[in-house]
Image (cartoon, rainbow, N blue to C red):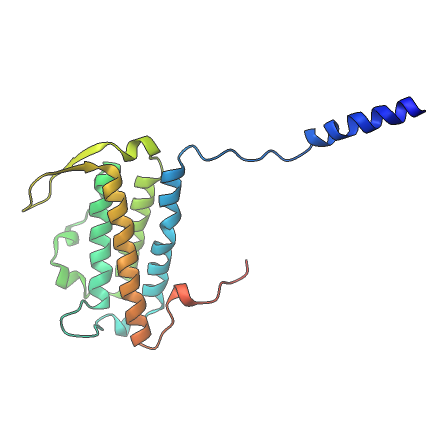
Length: 191
């Protein structure tokens, strides 16, 4: 009896250890995963534009600043421009994409939101397959009316994230001036 009890005491811990959940391994691409984690800026931007009434899309705090509609169309263009470089694929275009920014800024709210969402999806698809090793790859970028630039891919990823953060800050400020609460300041809803 003592022998049986002794075996149980010795074997029980090893049996319990075998049933412990496996600790997940560190992600294969922690740097890319970190950058993807900043997707909340895009979520906040879409929520901000969505919550602002269409009648306020021409609002700008001072004549020198951009209107809300202008910021929406600018973000679409900036997202596509940066993510074309990041992912190496061209964006889908339509004839209206070549219209002046001032014209696109007056498009209906739903159109601007749809274009912004599509640009953010394009960016997610450009970032998702990247590996950490690819972030260090040198890219040569040709901009109209600017000299060619060579820089590691990570430069363009950082530019994307800082641009989203900058414009979210801008939109949060506009919303406060309109008496609205920006998405990042709203209470977190329970899931």
